[in-house]
Amino acid sequence: MNILLDYEKNELYSMLESLGEPKYRVDQLVDAMYGGKDFDDKLNLPSSFLEKLSEFNYIMQPIKIRKAIESKGKDKTIKFLYDLPDGNIIEGVLMRYAFGNTLCVSTQVGCKMNCAFCASGLNGFVRNLSVGEILGQIVAVNRHLGGTKKDRQITNIVLMGSGEPLDNFDNVKKFLKILTSDECFNMSVRNISVSTCGIPSKIEELADLGYAVTLCLSLHAPNDIIRQEIMPIARRYSIREVIDALKYYYTMTNRRIIIEYTLIEGKNNSFKCAKELSEVLRDLPCHVNLIKLNEVDGRDLKAPTVDNCKKFLDTLNRFGVSATMRRTLGDDIEGACGQLRNKELQGEKVINKVNPNIKPKPNKNTQRKVKDASQLLKTKQNLQKNEKKINKNNTRKSSPKTKNNRGR
Ligand code: SAH
Image (cartoon, rainbow, N blue to C red; front, side, top):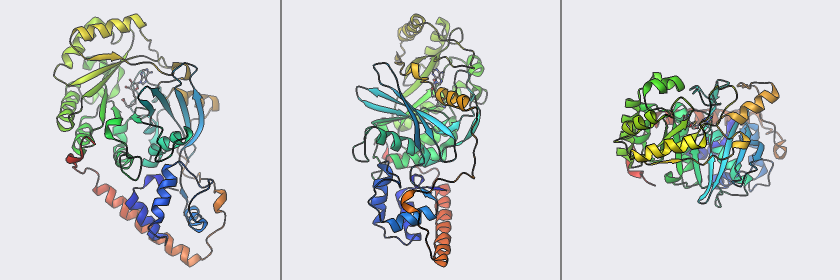
C-alpha cells in the first residue's frame, strides 16, 4: 500500500514519471489530495491515471473519520476518531477559539512514554504514523468543516494528540516540511506547536532545522523525584538536561517555550512545588500553561479543585512566572489524549495491532485492470527504483541545517 500523502511534490513528480504520466498532472493531483478528495469523488484526473494508481495500490486519503462527537458546551469542541488503512484507530480534537480553529493531531498509535496521568499509553505502543497519516488528519477535518486546500478551515495545529512527536521524528520533520510548503497548506510555523515529553537531543535537532515552531514541554513536576514518579522518561533525562536543550531552542529560534504542567492532587500542586517550579524556570524565557488533570479511567490520580488550581497559579504569578490556566475544552467528550480511543477499543473488545495484510478497498472509479502485463511489470520496476531513491534521499536529508528560513 502506498499513501500518496506521504510524498513531497518532487517525489510525486518521479512517481508520475514512472507511471508514464505527464508532469503537469501533479498539480491536479495535489489539489485533490490536500482538498480531501478521494478516488470515489468527482476528480479532475483522467480515469486511465486513476486506474494505474489503483493497480499499484496507491491510496489518497489514509484517514477516514469514524466518529465526530461535538461537545454539548458552548465551546463546540469536536472530538474525532479516525480509522487508519490497517484497521487501527486514532483520535484528534478540534478546538475553537476567537482566533480560529486549532486541530490537535496524533503522531503515533498508542505511546511508549506511559505517563501516569495519560490515557494514550494505557494500551501500549502500536506503531508510528506515516507522514501521510499525520497530514491526513488535517486534510480530513478540513474537508469535514467544508474547507478546501485554498480555503483552509484549520488555522492552527498542535502535535499534542496521542504519541510522542520526537519519537517519530523523521516523519514529523517531513510532515512539517510539507505542511509549511506552498503546494500544500502553506501553514506558518507560528501556527504550529509541537509538544514533547522532553528528549534533549531531538529538541536540539529541531532547533537546528530552523522551523521555529512553538515548542511545548510537558514538564509536570518541579524536580526530578516527582517527575520520575509520573513520567518514566524522566529516568532517562534530568530536568536540567531538558531545560538546557530548551534554552538552546530559544537561542536558535527566538521562540518562547511553553511549559505544560498538569495539576495532580497531592502530587505536584503544593505551594512548595509552585515555588520550586519558579526557581527551575528562572532563566528560561517561557510561559506556563497549567492544566487541571482530566481524570482517566485506569489511572489512579485525582484532579485538584478549581480553587486549588487558582492558588497554584497565583503563587507562580507572585514568584514572577508568566502563567495561565488552560481553558478545559471537551471534558464531556473524553477530551484528554487517548481517552476516546480507549473507550472505543473497550467497546469493540479488541486492541488493534498492525495488520499488514489488510489491503485498502478498491475504489469504484478504478475497477478496470491495466491489461498489458509486460507494461505493468516495467512500471512496477520503475516505481520500485523510485521508492528506493526516495528512501535514500530521505535518510540523507534527515537533518538539514536550514537556519535561515526561521520565523516563517
Ligand atoms: N507526548 C507529547 C504529546 C502528547 S501529551 C507530550 O508529552 O507532550 C500532550 C499533553 O496532554 C501533555 O502535556 C499533557 O499535559 C496533556 N495530557 C495528557 N493526558 C492528560 C490528562 N489526563 N489530563 C490533563 N492533561 C493531559
